[in-house]
Length: 190
Image (cartoon, rainbow, N blue to C red):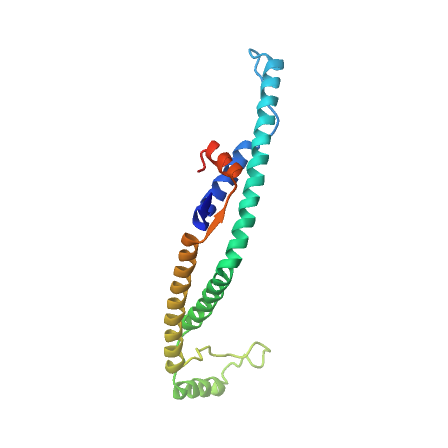
């Protein structure tokens, strides 16, 4: 049987959840009314059965993971996912740069600097303190416009990459064995 990568992803999540539900601590509590020996035997039998099922599901899960990994590589999805990560990182860098204030005019900067350098009042300079300073953005309007254009382009690229990844997830198929299919059907996963 073949399933798409998208279906395989959902199946793997359900299999992981099933394993988690099946793997229980081998401990019970018994009250004064219950028969402890019968309860222990029953619980031990159920625990062993659940461990067997969990082991079979785990083996099938990792077989599916291997098939998904191979399909991701063959289809080129791994490369697309890497490109998505790189594009998202580039978007973060550009957005952070655009969050800074725009650079003031050179006239403003020179005037602010002159005011700082002429301030000799109760001089903190003599007290060994930090020199007063001004903080300002360094990106002028032209650079910011270029970054805004870059950001729009990066966002388009990201949408296109995500569309390609989604298309591959819907069209790329992996093979699962008949035994895995039966196991998944028996546990209401497929």
